[in-house]
Every structure is written in C-alpha cells, then in structure tokens.
Image (tube, rainbow, N blue to C red; front, side, top):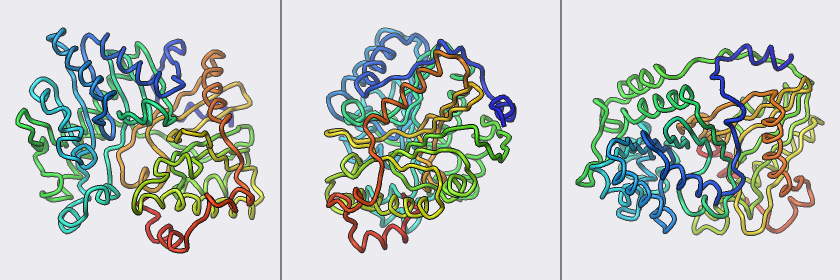
Amino acid sequence: MTCDSFASNFDGIEVDPENIRFLKTPDEFYNTLIDKVGNAQNRIYMSALYLGTGDLEKKLVTKLESCLNSKEDITIKLLFDYLRGTRGGEKSSAGILRHLADRLEAYFFHTPDLRGVSKKYLPERVNEIVGLQHMKFFIFDDSIIISGANLSETYFTNRQDRYVVIENSPKLVDFFVALFDAVSSCSFQLSAEGKLEPKCNCHPFKGDINEYRERFLSKTNEVLTVLKKKKRQDEDIEVTLASGYLNLYDEYQDLILRNSNFPVDIVFASPEANGFYQAEGFSGYIPALYVYISDLLNKKINALGKKIRLLEYQRPGWSFHAKGIWINWKDNYVATVIGSSNYGYRSTIRDLEAQIMIVTKNEVLKQRINEEKNMMLEYTRQLDNVILAKPDHYVPWWVRYVAHAFKNFF
C-alpha cells in the first residue's frame, strides 16, 4: 500500500508545510509559550494535566495576567485535570489561578469513573490511576502547539518531550477549540471564591454515571470525526514508536508483533530517565515495573524473530517523556503522530488524550520530522540481556506480581 492510498482512507485538515515546525528542548517550549502569550490578540486556550506552582509557572501566570490587563477583549480558557489540578490545596493549579478566576475561565475535568467508595477512600495520587484529563495543546489566536508536556518546571528544564508548532491554521485551531469547549462543558469551573462549580447538568461523580457518559460522548462526538480505518500489510515502511511509559495496549502490541513485516524501533525511558526514578514510597518502584514489562516484550520479540528493536533513552540528568510515532514510506512520504498518548492501557482506556497525525511529502517538513526523531535516537541504547542484568534493572519479585495484577492502570 502506498501512502497515497493510505491517506485516502482518512479525513484531515490541510496545513501549509511551511507553517509546521518542531521545538527541540524544554526551555524552547517554555520560551515559546511565554512569547505566544505575550503576542496573542484574541484567544488563548491551554489544556494540560496540570499547572505547577514553581517560579517558572508563576512567571507564566503573571504573563497571562499581563495579557488580561493590556487586552480587554482577549479570551483566556484553561483546562486541567480535577484530581491532579487540585492536589496540594493552595499549592495547586487551582490555587495558583484563584486570583484570576473572575477574569479567565479555568476548568477541571473529573473522571466519572472515580465515585462512590473509591472516591471516598482512595487517597490523593492513588486516585489518579482511575483516570485523568491528559490532553496537552496550547492555542494562541490561529496557531497551536501540540505536545505531551505538562505546564510545570521539570517539563520546562530537563524532561524531554515533543512539541510541534502549527502557525496560521484556523481550521485546525477551531477543531481543537471545539474539542476544548466540549470537554470543559462537562467539567468543573473555578469560581472567584476559589470553589469548583460543576458546569455539567449531570454531576461527574455524584450523578448517574450513564447519564454523564451519554452527555459527555454526545458533546465530544459532535466534534470528532470517525476516521475510516483499514488493516494492511505493508513492507515498504519503517516505523519508530516512542513512549515515556512503555506498557503497550494489547491490540497495539499484537499489531506490532503479529501483523508487521517492517522494521520497528520502540523507544522508552531507561530506569534513570523514568519520571519516577528515586521517587519516595511505592512510586520509587515504578521504573522497575516498566523494566519488567520491557523484559517481557523483549522475550516475545526474540521468540518471534521480528525486526524490532527496543531502545532505552539514557541521558544523564534528564528524564524522558516523549511519545509518538514516526513512519517513513519508501514512496517518498513521511508521517508522524504527536500528542499526549503513551499507547498504554491507561492512555487507551482511562485517560482523555489528544494527538494528530502529520503526513507529508514536502522535503523541508520531512527533514524537520526526521531531525526530531534522530535527535531523540542519539541518546538511546538497544535493550539486551547485558543491560537487563545490570543492578539498575533489578526487579523485585513483588513488582512482577504488581505488573500482572495492575497492568491496566499504567
């Protein structure tokens, strides 16, 4: 199958290739956000898991406030996850935005799956495994940044992610604005008194769950177009897949292991590059859990004799949070998928995600896409039995049990 016939099976939005560029580093991402906020004239929409409370985040909030002061007619809307965005009380996303609540719109989406006994007894942090608002996109007038990064200091300094800037694309931006409005209409809104008031007629965790889901799906389905999909065997492509947390959903894993006859590279965080490395309590064992999952996948690959490489991202002082797919066709096309999904169980089943697929034969854009991928690959090493035997890859016996028992929560 050629890329032309592949692309004909999908609806999409045409964008000028010259308007698409990739940011390389966390600080470039942060500085671009600051510049975009300062230059926006009509609208700013930001969606992320949460907004941190450090100095860099405070500077971003101050920039938003300055924008409100200098541009009376500008619209600013923010969307975060309710659980992650309220954790910490005053030192939370809701806390840092309270003084602006009467001048901008700040929404917090609460998963309807956390209710009843689990809502009452699951503690903070643990309750987030049930489901989160995980979409990451940032709109400034008719331009958009789509990423997997959150709005907090680590993601602005030394946690590698992906960031694509698409300028002057009103149709694409209007799509994401409609998506934002659909989700926010079923969320809580931060009031000037600091309270979170439900916007939805059916309460997310106190009302009837089926009624809430029906309302939420009706809102989002007004926006989302069902893409036609076609299963295919294609030996004329090369694929690279990246995930900050490698725990592939069964259907995706089977597609790679059973139905692919093309080379595949899978990039993921080494234990030291895992965002939970040296964390306190149970969280500190999460890197070991992902080591075990990668070991199981490595055994399956070797047993099948597939052309698949597992590549660990290892960069001293850095963590790895990038996710996405790169596809190179031999008939002169290149594609990439970029957004918030890690392609794991929770990304597929539990969390709200947003991503786009860019397909092009424009030589300049193809070069930009491949340069971004190659920059990531510079810091990788192929997983093998020697690496798995190293002390930092040790997996306690009980972590193996947890990996099997709770795999669909990661």
